[in-house]
Length: 167
Image (cartoon, rainbow, N blue to C red; front, side, top):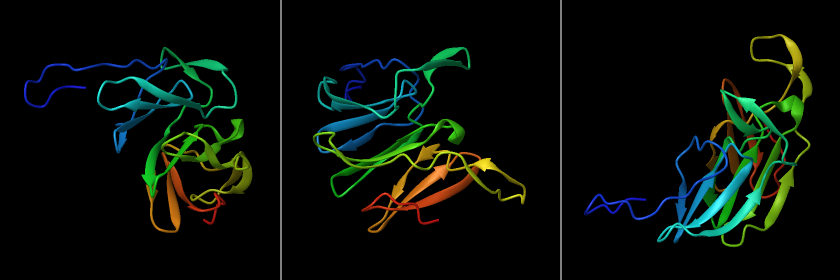
């Protein structure tokens, strides 16, 4: 973090994997999604760690782009709506996908949807295959819906209250 008036560095924080999306700010917190499979809540004023949430189901790591990364990186970048933080881990549906709603203050799980792994379905180009939602990108939240981008595939729409996939 840098001081906007002086351009001097105020603090820094390191994750155990790449950070591919900008942090999300809420109140005096910053939420950082990392390829190490974790979501970090930092104190925005001094960079101290408030809590860590492991979104990946285990600490299994792989090599990706010449770096060690989680098998389930947090590439479903977080969004906050009404004090609830939404994020996801995974980029390969056949390995399982893990979608979460967390209390933004405490990090406690409100709901979890881990039943959206590989499904046999027709792709947008018409070919049937094992696929599913590959959460990659910054989520959007409305009053009722959670929109989850899918990298190079189609986005998904979930019910924000229950975590059930609608589209």
